[in-house]
Image (cartoon, rainbow, N blue to C red):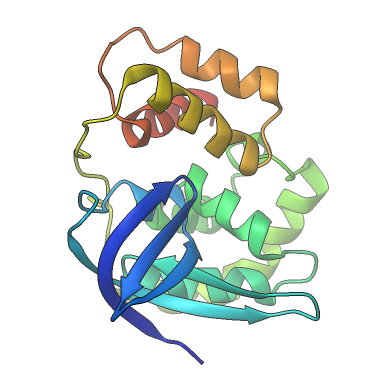
Length: 201
């Protein structure tokens, strides 16, 4: 099991990235909440990881905080929740927001996540309620989102943001509309994704 990687960030194509660890390039998929916190290309970063082994592939998922990885592991243990849906849930909601939804029994936010219908949302709330009792005493990461470092061309950033939203399960038209609705110029792809998700969820 690969539990943690520390290396140089060499490529960032939301939600995928490549981390160079002593000359070996590890391809990881990360939730948007982790993506927002990544440093610039060429800088060192440490990510907590979870390896999923399938018949046709070994998939590595990366998380900025251990608590994010623990949430991911709790989610994929649930019946009918795979890594893709888990990442979509974690990209649309901060960890603490998801915990609050579960504790309050609120399905209204969950059903806005791609792949989550009303029945799925209700089942998630029931199955997660007991699991999250222990989370009430864990440190908060409500301040997870920080200002991303920009530097990408706007058109490229917009394309990356739309692609990332589509990979999370949003329809191409929804993704394009959400990104186009952001009026500010010169935003990084990370900031575009963050604002688009905030507007959609």
